[in-house]
Amino acid sequence: MYTPIETYRGFVYPSSIDHVGHMNVQFYTARFDEATWQFLAQLGLTPSFLKRNQRGAVAVDQHTQYKREVLAGSLLHVTTELLALGRTSIRFVHRMYDSETAEEVAQTEFVGVYFDTEHRVATQLPAAVHRCANAMRAAHVSMSPDLGDTTEEMIAVT
Image (tube, rainbow, N blue to C red):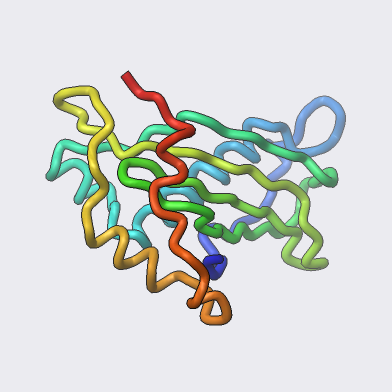
């Protein structure tokens, strides 16, 4: 198990509200996307690192649950928890909260692949990413067996 970290904090403006009076799904997705970039940076996969090394991070699977309406004027924050790290893939979950009530309002789980942008194929994650991930392990489960490459079996990138 890994320790969740905060990866986003923001405010819901009226322009994010749809015809039914709550935040439109595109704005949940945008906030989760911003949280993803912050999370990847915590693992050492910053935008400048990716560009310099002709690498990218591509989403191959995403599942979102909307748990409660979010209205204009709401304060939000997102925490992110690494679930598994494979040879070329990463699985993590974002949880979005109402910052005033601490109630979870949505969550999304991603599987992403580390990608060679020149050759257009999945490629091995740098060892430094695995070291950063190990530092995120929750202290109380440090004796748990390593998940290894279990996520690799879920991914087929051609």
